[in-house]
Image 1 (tube, rainbow, N blue to C red):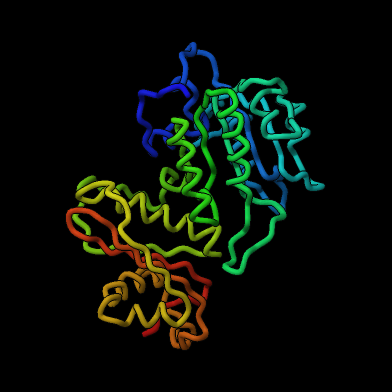
Image 2: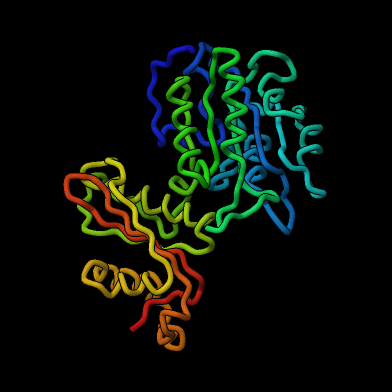
Length: 330
């Protein structure tokens, strides 16, 4: 397997935006030539019922986009696609005709453009949305691991690899997520995952200076833990990693649900979160809803993570995902 000499950070890949970072890290290319991308997606729809992540991401790579009303042309060329599911409102077939890329029946064929050798500069995996089962924990069993396994099979066979980006978190399974990272290290290809949340527009505008001293941090999100808890985690991470000591990783994670959230909040260990939680959920422009705030903990729905991070001084962070009724008591 070919060696790579350039280290890649998460920020560098996110900064590449819709362009991805192509195979210049893998093999020399003419800089003016657009890198070719194989898009491996679970489904591609965009209508009133659902704007799939494939539409959000691949759509910009096909059509370009206009951040802050500034037109940005695609910096890559989607040349192939594999769709794991094709619902009645699928858009991929029409887009393939419009943008002159081909849809292949297998992941391997999409990477090889129908031939027998790897023929693209980068791979984009979007394992989000589609008709898949849910486990007892409420996790959607998206086949991100299985899709990437087929990508890696091509890399192994050809003894050559290209950069891979995977949308959202890696897997519902710790073992599968760990294995995906191990593949990238074993075969030495750049591998990144996540969403645009860390680099999206912030309202109000907020940029925390590097080396800021934090005591504690709290983030509040909404929606299901599996789909939207990840976004809340990213929001928290991209803020606190600018602390003194920088990006030093996560030492431990604890998850609480239901009544345990409120017991932790009122305990000596979690009491620091009360003023932050009240300020976040009760903005100054809005009066507290006493009917909601007086509800018992049993009537609220909330999940909470307590995250201890490793830096020069331990930093305790908290995340909460909530329904509209998840408000702090008085």
